[in-house]
Image (cartoon, rainbow over all chains, first blue to last red; front, side, top):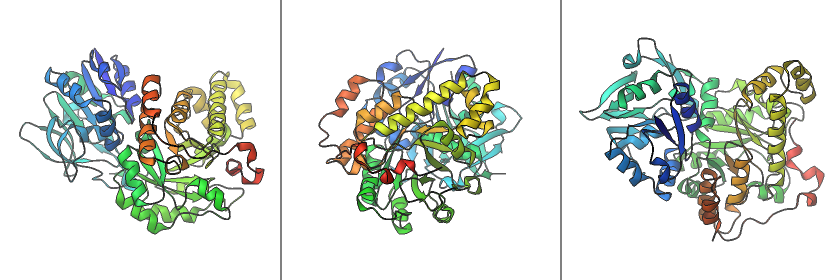
Length: 188
Length: 294
């Protein structure tokens, strides 16, 4: 099995480390040709505007959508979650738009409001998950086919729609591999 | 319970900036050009380093009004600079809500012995370093991100190369030392022992390490990335060139595709004139910004 991590900008190395700890091979994806052999794709945290511009410039949107049509699972964290959303509040920035979710960018505020907290994710086990939120987006609405997997307070922070998974927090910044394992087990 | 300002959260934002370009801007219009070009963050300043160098005199934190206008103009993170040791300027920037503070040698230091206690703040700090000892002293004070100093405002990347090679070389040396030699190495570098142990174990700095100081072209950015840095600061190099929007976009592409000479060749063309460069030897010793900081 081979997981590609979009490596245009952001914390892609941390995702590679997480999947390798689970015994799965990874490659960094910067150009369309690197998508060919992938069994799954991760869109990491970083700046969604930067990623969107580089995806446009280097022609990644259509090849990724084609792979998705032929069944490729995709997991987006933070900026990656924004790329997964069909609707981004108040923004027309480029996106993959794979999931029926509405998201709000920087919804938790600026960096001084970034935080970590224990959240409950029943789908990955009964132990709380230490979630790191960095200038984090939230999911403000979901369509009927979307499963809400975790909330922080009233805010939706983790959701799945079939082969697609989106997290507002950064499972790649902690040593807890349960979210990455969930993607491999449930979305692949 | 939500915990703010933790080490993970401070270091985490720097992790999200990796592989990206942070650009100096002095107006909301420049900030928008930077964001449109794909900058992953901007540094809000009153003057870029080349103009600070030309103006001489005392350089201070930017006017909060300018910083707030820049914060309102873009959705990407906004950083701002304080003078070395000026913890009250840092308190002001934290109150404004800037996303990162650069305790920077580009401004005139106010304390010739002590840097800011960066653990006293929720907002994270980035600091400059010329060598591993300096980097680890800054991390010991609470810096969650390190950058090379280079020689700011020169458009000459030679000093950034020197500092990056020095830091990476010292890391390689530490990583190969038997444990009993690490205490003497810590003593020689003037670095906290616990952090030297971490470097030995990780084989890299325990925080994100960017390049800064003199980067003026896409090739400069790719060179620094190939030397092992995590991302790029461009100070005067964008808005002192003849076509800032095109150059900014090219530097962003070069930072992502730093290992791909075909793409580097494509993005390096038709950018107009780069900023005028300065020979380091032509700078009087007391004008060298990199010697500020202790």
